[in-house]
Image (cartoon, rainbow, N blue to C red):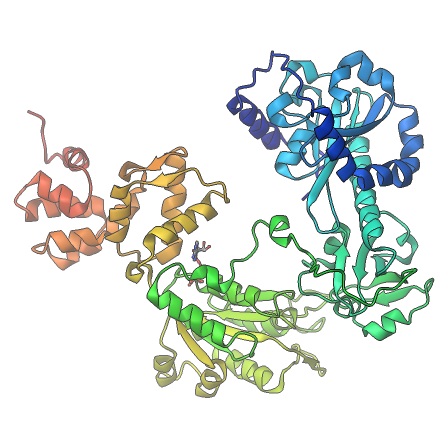
Length: 620
Ligand SMILES: Nc1ncnc2c1ncn2[C@@H]1O[C@H](COP(=O)(O)OP(=O)(O)OP(=O)(O)O)[C@@H](O)[C@H]1O
């Protein structure tokens, strides 16, 4: 969830569009939806802890800010039903009292764009100003709302502050952000504070008591049981698979022996120091909390999470073999060498390999050796000390290899690495230490190495462009990724790429005719080209069915179809773009429009149009 200080126009426009799709009319006064008394009673019971920590532990800290303003604090459950409200009653009674009754439903589809309903839909902190409400009847208030997550990152409610127009939006936004974080901290403590250890940390020893401190709860084995969202931000990493000793960079025993009020300095996962305090539980538990693995709902939190290796096995034999091979060396630290044409998904494959490995909590650093100028490759990879060379960053640089420490280093297009850099890389791989340029010191490194190439490294060795000794170092296991034209899972891939193009919100489909064209295409740019074609086509098809007319012109330039159908056409013709090739194909096929259209996989109309442009066809 991200935070924003300004109303986001796009967010409001999208919400208004949803309201129209729900059939709402901005002039209407829709019937209020109220939970039935029994339903509300159940909701209220389920949310009892959240309501009581808000009332008793959080609101008192904000009383002074709210006392002099005409505003209301509202707490709803995860479906937008109002559980409780606090604040200045004159504000709500003047305006729309029924809306502020316990049990009233604030979902977008009921009362249009509003901070609570829209925050629930977007799952992010949301500000809705007066005129941004969809219904005219609600345009009397400004509001900010934040979803609240439980100790396992599931949305359990929304905290909202609505006010008349006189409280500054930025102030309300900030207040909602801090209050919702405070509620989440209290929910974590209510669930685990009594029996588990708390690790409270921040960027300065002076703000360890703030609601903005990171909070991690861990068990007697050092497993992280729960954490607030601030913890992820401070550590800059998702917490899946991480234990408390990795976070703190010290042993569990040392952590547990720390005095309650002592302040620790640590930088286990970060490149900068952080400060922490340990709170021991009143009744320490020596059992793990019933099978809970944090974060239990990580997939919901990170919708764009990396696919795992098995996700890439979508029905193609060669791909299944590649996935199987990579799985068999997972976590063994055997170097992988990936072969594949450009755009076949090498980097995606490596990301999936990394995400499936025990190194997933650390960085995967991808370096395209062909994209970095040869004179910069060494300094980029190995780092340098300050003043190492003219034009260098005056602070020096750690280098990409050290950034990959504990994670995965992916060297793409390794065949393009200059020979002197190859020698240096070989030394790093042998010694497992990096010496930055200009430095006499070396640093230990530990990473999974994956290299990729589209060329034959054996040929490069023969041509003395690639070191044989390095080849044997990097080639623990060779995996070949198939070209798109050879894959048997085109339909699955199209869906997977459409998901990516549409950001997971796929409405568009592909017609049978287009699927046939896809099957007969050469795809020299492989999945990347498919991606580009579908991105353009999705826009042109306006969210409906992608038909041939939605495909970009250059798609037709290298259709296999030309080669298959028009055997009697010169090979050279097939290398040309379709606009140039078309009149020549037309001539070669005895000026037959239908055959030309078939050979070029375009419509007869397109052939007529192009011939007319060239003056080769005249109506009548
Ligand atoms: N299975 C897949 N599903 C959806 N999209 C994919 C898939 N595989 C690859 N892609 C997409 O195809 C594009 C190219 O993938 P990637 O960068 O991994 O290829 P590459 O082989 O590393 O390319 P290059 O050789 O140019 O470095 C990216 O946009 C990627 O997201």
